[in-house]
Length: 330
Ligand code: CUA
Image 1 (cartoon, rainbow, N blue to C red):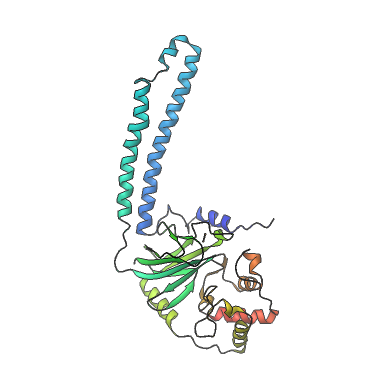
Image 2 (cartoon, rainbow, N blue to C red):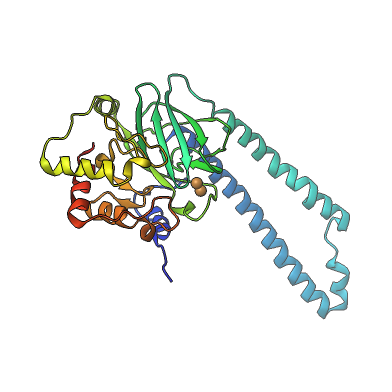
């Protein structure tokens, strides 16, 4: 049996060191609010659980004693009578515990209102990757969302196929991406860093490998990144790159992928205009190395079974030239 261990690794990584994807290690204002609410709820319900356990032990003890002695049998009724006990434990206690928690959670969600001065990013969920667009300057990328740290980011969420759910646990809660519906959401990272996101709604075979990264940069770094991404690309020069470009344009890649400034304008798969600059490939499945990229092109089904991309049959040196070309796209 061919086991895919990527999700397991994600869980292990989330439990060790600086977690990339842990909602109890918040890195933004909304996530901090959610984490606080989570700890308050955990505390309250731990208290209730311990009370129930104590009452259960008392009941067992009294039952055992009652079974042994005739006199104790008369004591098995609770001190306030059976009705009083049910009213106190089943009505009064839940109201006393749940009302403050309910009010607290309402106050917490009232603080989730989108702040002003947000940068807009449009995210479209696909089976099983993320399209990322910056409407203000026309940048299109995939599976990597660059944002400025310390500034709210307004997200327009949509889906190209089935229901997905956008979730970056360290930055905010989940928000569904529903076909035909535009959902607006926001998040903010307090500090520069890389925050892993994961589709939070089962969406098919590769749901678990529908991941992405939010890369929060300092405002200056973000401005530089943004300028670099929106500049017009220079045509490639070296013979190897030229050959790679020809392979890209003739081997079928452009049917599904786009590269700005070329004849490739497909939109069924991720835009590859800056693929060489990405940290990961395949929906944050694999590090973007030459070997992984070659393996992905040659047989994506082996790495992510069910993915829409078919195998590409290429001679070894054509594949090498293609990878050289893709790595040059930054
Ligand atoms: Cu997309 Cu699960």
